[in-house]
Length: 279
Image (cartoon, rainbow, N blue to C red; front, side, top):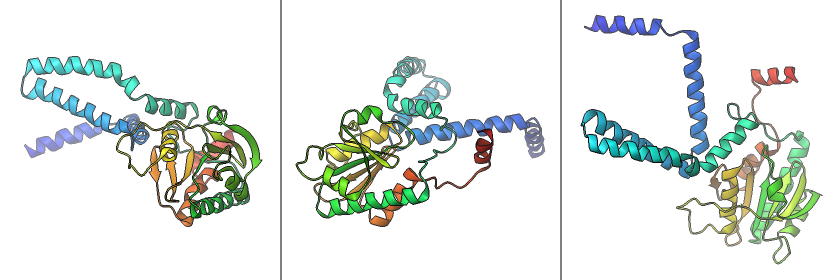
């Protein structure tokens, strides 16, 4: 019997060709990327709920032979698939935007500033963040990456100014006209300030998080921007990215999180050479 099983296994393996292995690998990559898109968002909980429904439908129709429950589950699943584009709208939008920018399979390529420019800008942002944190001055700073934020910057006042710690301190100084909104950074320029951001609809957030933090999470759910927040109540420095909020950052951690937004910290791969050759 064991020998028969071994023969069947060897026979099955012998039918697998190179194209089958490649197809399995591509499917695995696609499912992994889809999981990364919904990881840490409300969609992952919804996906688990859909999986439970599939499992219940399978048990009712196959194992326990319960036709009535099976029929109800099938009808319910039909309505679920109709509602999926509405329920997963933010995630679908993010996935399609990544496909349009050619960033679905390979990782993002960050900003194109040279190393010296990037270090200078990061230093100015970190200096301003520490100063604002020490005085418990609220701040909201959006660092644009691959995905354009013209629709967000148009809600504020256009500045197109050189980035400096002094300028950021003046923008977020209490009772100034622009201190309540967000400032947008594009490359090495401060594009605009006083901008309005969408608030997150994510539930279960800490009650300590105010409007700035919810706005930062909300925008990070919809694009690839890096959003820096300084709490007005505690002076805590936080970073929002991909729907997640990293809090209580010190100077060293903040610097390391800002680097990928301004410089390419990836290792060189063979497809980098191919891309360069094609260009």
